[in-house]
Length: 110
Image (cartoon, rainbow, N blue to C red; front, side, top):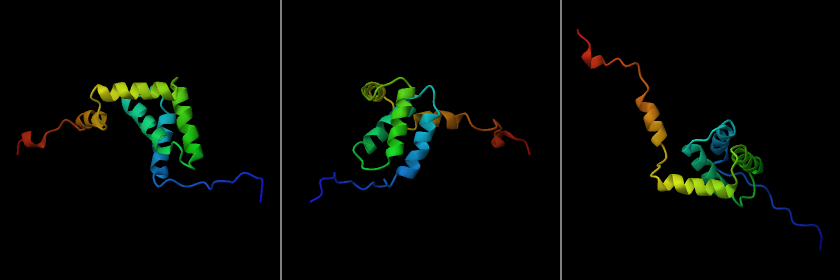
C-alpha cells in the first residue's frame, strides 16, 4: 500500500466556459451592482466543493475581496437584495428601453 495521499482528478464543469466570461466581468468591476453581487454569490455556490475550475474559484474570491467583502458579507448583501424585490434581468430591461434612435416610423409623412 502506498502512503501518499490520493489525488482527486480535476473535473471540467459544463458551464465553466460561460461562467468564465461572467467572472472576467466581475473582476473588471470596481463598484458592483446588485446583479454583480448576485452573480458572484451564485457562482460561488455553484463551484463550492467542485473538484476543478480552481482558477475560476480563485478569481471569484479575488473579485469579492476587491469589493471589500467577505463571503459572509456577500451573502448578507444578497439576502437584502433578494428581499428588496430584485429579479435577475431587471437592469437589462431598463437599458433596453433606452436604446434606439428616437425615430418613430409610424409618425412619418408619406
